[in-house]
Length: 117
Image: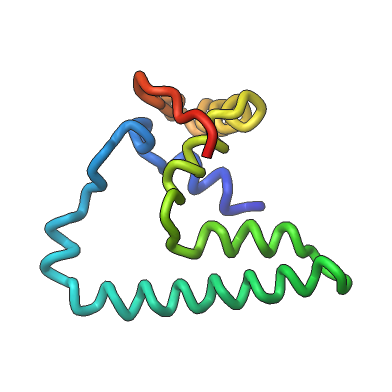
């Protein structure tokens, strides 16, 4: 809960407008270290997913754990799903409020409508 406002306020305002992610030079220069990090991150995400599904029937915060897994895992359409969630009215207004409190401009989403995931 503490990290959400920090992450939201540090996002560049054009994060969802950018089509090509920055850092491609870093990826090519340090490609040998990127893959082990991606593998470990996805393994941790799979662990969160597994325990989140278990916590749906056992005591615990199953949905929150599954949400954390969805943020950690790499899968096709992840960026589009993130954009769709962030453009919902309630989520967007909450994010804009947090960014205003931090003195940052609201997020931009560009011309296109992300539609449904």
